[in-house]
Length: 115
Image (cartoon, rainbow, N blue to C red):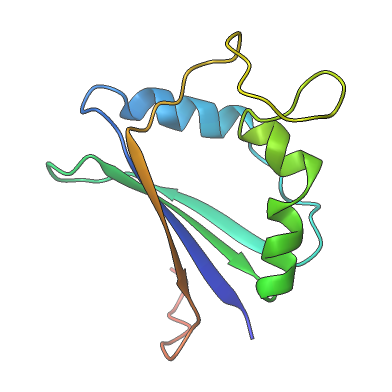
Protein backbone atom coordinates (compact mmCIF):
# COMPACT_ATOMS: atom_id res chain seq x y z
CA UNK A 1 0.00 0.00 0.00
CA UNK A 2 1.22 3.51 -0.81
CA UNK A 3 2.45 5.97 1.77
CA UNK A 4 2.08 9.74 1.62
CA UNK A 5 4.77 12.19 2.72
CA UNK A 6 3.79 15.83 3.16
CA UNK A 7 6.43 18.49 3.58
CA UNK A 8 4.73 21.53 5.14
CA UNK A 9 6.95 24.50 4.25
CA UNK A 10 6.27 27.88 5.83
CA UNK A 11 7.57 30.81 3.78
CA UNK A 12 7.49 34.58 4.24
CA UNK A 13 4.29 36.02 2.75
CA UNK A 14 6.15 37.44 -0.27
CA UNK A 15 8.21 34.30 -1.05
CA UNK A 16 5.62 31.80 -2.28
CA UNK A 17 6.23 32.60 -5.94
CA UNK A 18 9.94 31.88 -5.48
CA UNK A 19 9.16 28.53 -3.86
CA UNK A 20 6.89 27.63 -6.79
CA UNK A 21 9.58 28.73 -9.29
CA UNK A 22 12.19 26.52 -7.65
CA UNK A 23 9.88 23.50 -7.68
CA UNK A 24 9.02 24.13 -11.34
CA UNK A 25 12.73 24.26 -12.20
CA UNK A 26 13.17 20.76 -10.77
CA UNK A 27 9.95 19.29 -12.19
CA UNK A 28 10.40 15.63 -13.04
CA UNK A 29 13.63 15.24 -11.06
CA UNK A 30 12.15 12.53 -8.83
CA UNK A 31 10.03 10.83 -11.48
CA UNK A 32 12.56 8.06 -12.18
CA UNK A 33 13.12 7.20 -8.52
CA UNK A 34 12.18 3.61 -7.72
CA UNK A 35 8.87 3.53 -5.85
CA UNK A 36 7.90 7.16 -6.54
CA UNK A 37 4.20 7.42 -7.45
CA UNK A 38 3.44 11.13 -7.69
CA UNK A 39 3.88 14.69 -6.47
CA UNK A 40 1.86 17.87 -5.94
CA UNK A 41 2.82 21.33 -4.72
CA UNK A 42 -0.16 22.91 -2.99
CA UNK A 43 -0.35 26.69 -2.67
CA UNK A 44 -2.46 28.17 0.14
CA UNK A 45 -5.55 30.05 -1.07
CA UNK A 46 -6.10 31.95 2.16
CA UNK A 47 -3.86 34.00 4.47
CA UNK A 48 -1.70 31.00 5.38
CA UNK A 49 1.95 30.98 4.36
CA UNK A 50 2.47 27.22 4.59
CA UNK A 51 2.76 25.40 1.28
CA UNK A 52 2.37 21.62 1.10
CA UNK A 53 4.58 19.31 -0.95
CA UNK A 54 2.64 16.05 -1.21
CA UNK A 55 4.43 12.96 -2.48
CA UNK A 56 3.19 9.39 -2.75
CA UNK A 57 5.54 6.41 -2.49
CA UNK A 58 5.13 2.66 -2.92
CA UNK A 59 6.48 2.09 0.60
CA UNK A 60 8.65 3.61 3.35
CA UNK A 61 11.80 1.95 1.98
CA UNK A 62 11.35 3.68 -1.40
CA UNK A 63 11.04 7.05 0.34
CA UNK A 64 14.08 6.42 2.56
CA UNK A 65 16.14 5.28 -0.45
CA UNK A 66 15.35 8.59 -2.15
CA UNK A 67 16.21 10.63 0.97
CA UNK A 68 19.62 8.96 1.11
CA UNK A 69 20.28 9.41 -2.65
CA UNK A 70 22.52 11.90 -4.45
CA UNK A 71 19.42 13.12 -6.29
CA UNK A 72 17.88 14.20 -2.98
CA UNK A 73 21.12 15.85 -1.83
CA UNK A 74 21.38 17.75 -5.13
CA UNK A 75 17.76 18.91 -5.05
CA UNK A 76 18.05 20.08 -1.47
CA UNK A 77 21.31 21.98 -1.90
CA UNK A 78 23.47 19.49 -0.02
CA UNK A 79 25.71 18.13 -2.78
CA UNK A 80 29.23 19.41 -3.51
CA UNK A 81 31.16 19.16 -6.79
CA UNK A 82 32.92 16.02 -5.59
CA UNK A 83 29.61 14.34 -4.75
CA UNK A 84 29.83 15.03 -1.02
CA UNK A 85 27.51 17.23 0.96
CA UNK A 86 27.87 20.70 2.37
CA UNK A 87 26.10 24.00 2.87
CA UNK A 88 27.60 25.78 -0.15
CA UNK A 89 27.20 29.55 0.26
CA UNK A 90 26.98 29.95 -3.55
CA UNK A 91 23.66 28.12 -3.69
CA UNK A 92 20.38 29.97 -3.37
CA UNK A 93 19.31 30.48 0.21
CA UNK A 94 16.30 28.45 1.37
CA UNK A 95 12.94 30.12 0.81
CA UNK A 96 11.26 28.42 3.75
CA UNK A 97 11.58 29.62 7.31
CA UNK A 98 10.47 26.27 8.70
CA UNK A 99 9.38 22.84 7.48
CA UNK A 100 7.76 19.75 8.94
CA UNK A 101 7.54 16.29 7.41
CA UNK A 102 4.21 14.53 7.94
CA UNK A 103 3.69 10.83 7.13
CA UNK A 104 0.37 9.19 6.27
CA UNK A 105 -1.04 6.10 4.64
CA UNK A 106 -4.35 6.01 2.79
CA UNK A 107 -7.15 4.82 5.08
CA UNK A 108 -10.16 5.36 2.84
CA UNK A 109 -11.57 7.63 0.18
CA UNK A 110 -12.99 7.42 -3.31
CA UNK A 111 -11.77 7.50 -6.89
CA UNK A 112 -13.93 10.51 -7.81
CA UNK A 113 -15.01 11.19 -11.35
CA UNK A 114 -13.08 12.96 -14.07
CA UNK A 115 -14.96 15.76 -15.82
